[in-house]
Image 1 (cartoon, rainbow, N blue to C red):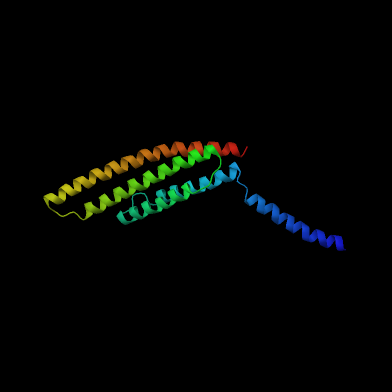
Image 2 (cartoon, rainbow, N blue to C red; image 1 turned 30 degrees about the horizontal axis):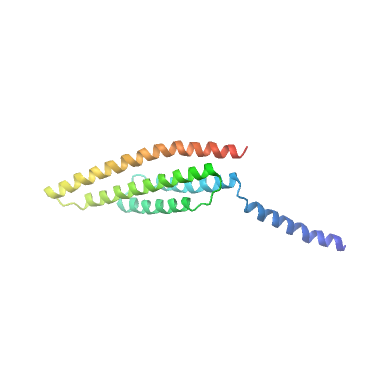
Length: 159
């Protein structure tokens, strides 16, 4: 009877230790999962807030700054994933800045007076909005390829 009680205690403790070690695993797969989750969070924010108003655009820019920081702070050991990490940091940082710039320009256009000076302010804002959105669109196209490459790399890790 004494031996079976020992086994009852040893088995759960061993299982707990195995799960603890597995959860601390920093394999390529777990690193991929952490990076993909962070990137997906940023992408979901963009999808959710497309075409939003000034205040929402400015909040989106702040949220993307947080996502950028979160991605930057991931401690990835795999050199290829570190390259992806760096590229996504640049992408979300650029996107955040462009959305913020477009949001501020839209806000200044909305508050412009109905006067010749106001018309100039609106034209200037329109130029800033167009250039910001063009840059954001270009970044988004580049990120599509980046996401595809990340998914391919991470799917190789699972094989």
